[in-house]
Length: 270
Image (cartoon, rainbow, N blue to C red):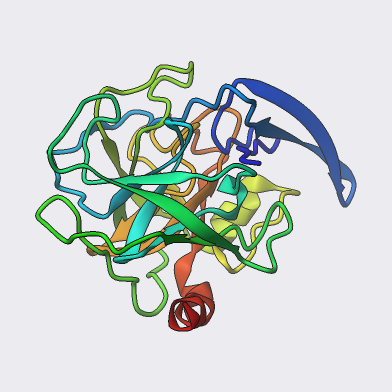
């Protein structure tokens, strides 16, 4: 099952069928919209307020798909492993597409793989520890269009200039892009993010970011894509508010530095 979560406005990617589940945190109730994949597949989400990425300028970007339909983004962290979000796990056998700008065109640089095993973090509870590794059926051929991204060493500065990217909704209205989109992101101090989210738990293993303008950030279908800072993967797209890119409910990423030992252990064992 793949889902995209919205917390009183939290988005984790918008899919065709939406089911609302209410979870209580302290004294407040928070609605989680779980976007469940139906037999026909699911539409992905797009970057809001971004721009077309230059062709093959983000060669680590991966599209996680089910039956040919985009579900989530991801990043190639080893030739045979993609890093994505745990909430992107699906009951079917997903495929991974690398080396493309457009998901609808035919590009000679395209490489496609089967996922032979999924490794969601054992501590994922539907909210925190939203991170997963996907083992591919063979190693990718590294080229100008397909490359591995390094994981950022150490923690981010409280305020960092980064980018994120994806093939998700670009208008918060199920409008999908023709090519890969990217947007600039500024990370926020942890306490500011916690204050804006109120009763929604923002843990130390999460990092928050906003665009330079209102309604800039990630949206449905971008889930699992990377937050890239100084050329390294620093976060994994997790959830946002009901309005994509709204700085009052900042975009939330899983902080990769909190999971480096787990990531290395999975890679070493496989």
